[in-house]
Length: 559
Image (tube, rainbow, N blue to C red; front, top):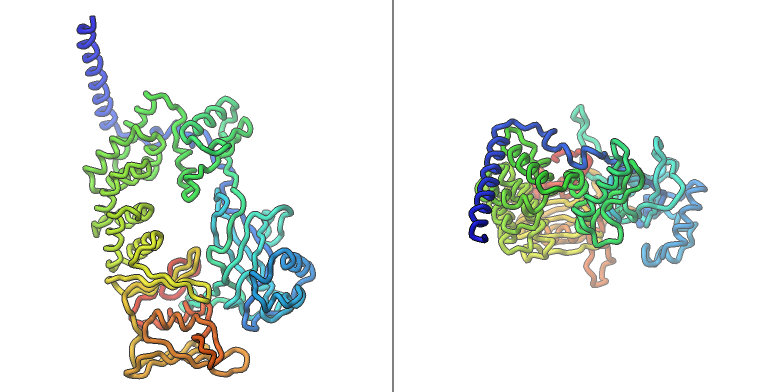
């Protein structure tokens, strides 16, 4: 009996195989419509509700100003600030000088300024997410500049709809603090004229931290308890969570909450898109049919690879064999997307294909491949790739490689924290010399190139004539003269010709002569960035490096 069953089973298997091949051929020949292929995903039954940035603000103090603050403060704001100063440990935050003052004296000091802090908490962001905030001196005060100041820890509250300043009652949703960056770069108007930003306004780069999870709600387009339970069950089975709450929580017949799993906390937007790309019907036959449709759709002209790969990833491991075939045989755009998706599904073999794409000079996905690999820089092959990319003249690739190597403390990067509150990184690179101002999270200045030095026989003076840098012909040092803000006296210090030592000297605090401690100019991060920008301009011919600003919402000359 058993011997008779073997040919029968074999025959049935072959029939199934031929039917599968015939279906694949039929699908391939048919021009598929994307809306038909993606029909049945959770995104066709739901839409996100309230998935927008939310406006927040708060009143606070900027401290550590060189006499450019003011004593004016509206009574209601003053009461709020005194409450803040009472709650926080002033000594540990502001230092001994302020610790000896009363709250009223701190607020009325010329070294502090009353400010309005505003920002937007990103849509769907989890607790701990970082974002920028703007800081503005109150219009009713005589503060002249926020340059060099530090923002006191500031609770941020929701702002009512249609208002830019009216705070809603309730608990705070974020905390902001850190060094204030005042844009030092000349900006260009539409008529071509240059102007500088208002020094009474600044920003704290990555200085705000969300202290609560943003609720992500999905609204059913056709309210139904049965459908809501089905979606909840499907998402919770596709993304099993170790947390007490599941990924999806039904709230009513037309609404549910989407919770970000911990493993996606650093990439929560990708998870939201992925959840909406899950097919609701999880039967094997349906999933297999959708996979075949996606495979065929990916081969069509003008295919939307982002949407297709999300659906592949949502289906999961059954797609891996096809993805592996694609990235091993295709070197085009589809090959990249297949490798990226496979790597998202923990197929580490895809790393080799992504490395090869990142090494192809003219590949359309070269930079995207490098960005994906940045999350795997602890792999020795990836580390070797990034060390090589540091030597390219492509600025974007250099920066991707730098950030990836910095995150694993690679020996090609030397890091130094300077007294002005920013980092100075020196990168061993054989590509073009770059002076990179990093304005994301922790501010820093990055030098690409080894032992970059100022030219000889040069003279530089800032536009306000408060700082002069002179390098006499044949000299081995830079002579720096700075006009002190209070008594118009001159501070004279020297630095080596190397760019790193010049930046360090500009950052170090001012010391009295004869103390035996190194003295510097005591400039802020934004002041130093503005000076370096001017010194890198071709007409100055002082620093042999290209100046690049990493990130700013402000359009400035030379960006």
